[in-house]
Length: 155
Figure 1 (spheres, one colour):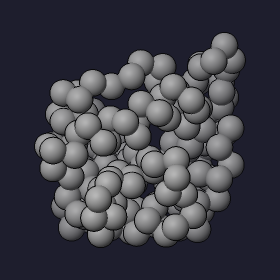
Figure 2 (tube, rainbow, N blue to C red):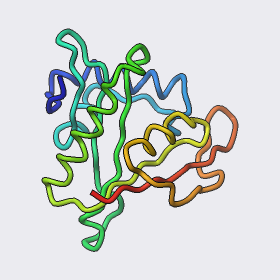
Figure 3 (cartoon, one colour):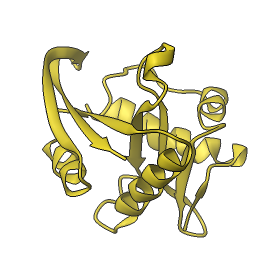
Figure 4 (cartoon, helix red, strand yellow):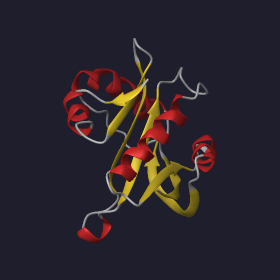
């Protein structure tokens, strides 16, 4: 089931997020998130994939850049539990997130995908996101520079 995130989901979301921070380059952030940080970040515009027992993934959107001129443009994050890939929940999460953003008056959504994660680029392409830029060596993690692929979808 896809639903709005609740404060009580913060522990499980933090576990998913922190695994990605520790073990992967899908996020360039090297600092783990606390339960309180996650609770604040998911307070709005965050959806979860709940299998009835566990949170299997989450997706949220947030302002792309500051300033009034960018108010209709958002960026998103999606992360799945490491055992939930390939089960369709990520697609359902993103479809629901795009509907949520469009209903909230947003016009376009960006995805920032690590170039080391071609699966994320392919996933977003299947959902109608188009590659618009590759930002060379903007991320640094695990002792190396990493490119960021920017993808955009008009809602």
